[in-house]
Length: 120
Image (cartoon, rainbow, N blue to C red; front, side, top):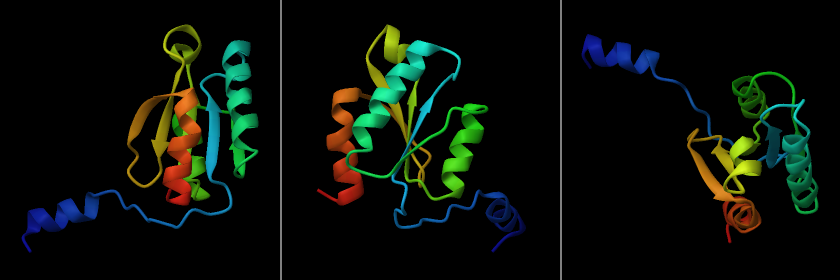
C-alpha cells in the first residue's frame, strides 16, 4: 500500500451499514414555517405511519436533519420542498447507506419503500 492510498483510505468517509431499526423513514419538510410544505409533509407522514415507524423532524438545517436520522439508523429520509408543492408533486428520497438522493412522485413512495424495507 502506498502512502497516497493510505492517506486516501484514512480520509474516506466511513459508512456503517446497519439493518433497518425501529424507525424506518424520517419525513422532513424543507422549512418549518411554510404551511404548504408542512401540510404536504404531514400528509405523507400520516400515510406512512400506518405502515412503519416514521419520525418527523422540522428543526434546523436539512443537512443536520439528515445527520440526525443517520445517527439513529433511519434508512430513508423523505424531503418535501417547494418543487413538491409548486411543480412536480415529487419528493426527494435519501438512502442512508449510499447517501444517494432520488426524486419520486408521492404516489410511488409506498411501493418503493415497501420494496426497499420489506424486500418485496
